[in-house]
Length: 255
Image 1: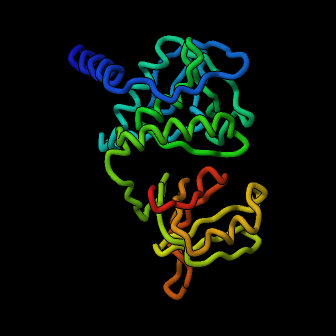
Image 2: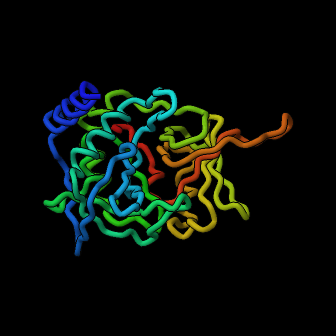
């Protein structure tokens, strides 16, 4: 146990030294403070008062708590969050302040009012994600992530590889068709993938915005699921849900 704790401390120190803080987003408005009990992974922690907190604006690689088959940089993200939060963390409640799992949705900050999510992003230890209505600081989060992408830090050391499986994904592909029905917008790609903008998120786009993307190479990010298609179905097998324009962008030739 002692050896493990020493390794964790060394890893946290390595992360602090290896990834300087770039692109920090500073808190706007008042902050509250809470005592940290322990970190769960790179974007979730427990507070001493019993609250379980999910950081808003960032999704970090998954830890496999059962078998130890962690996604790349999952451990580094967990240790970086622990180092940034320390024994106490400063927080702001998001507009929608609780998720379906009962976790509190907070923006977290250091004592210097620097966003913890933005530092994880600029270190290349997570992906920026926009889940309305919690889209505060999104422009700054995008800048922080872009710094990591440009410098090829962490997750951005290699090009993102889309996988046809459930979970969070970043996918690049050419849009081949655009349709609309009671389920929202459906943007089919060259892959076995269709991007869905659900009806409740449609107001973030105009119809012109959507049709402009047809035939273009785009990057989409969000959580995807696999349809239970029948053999004769003509539908794509994987559906990726996008809820905000920050998470669906045209790729320029220089990107």
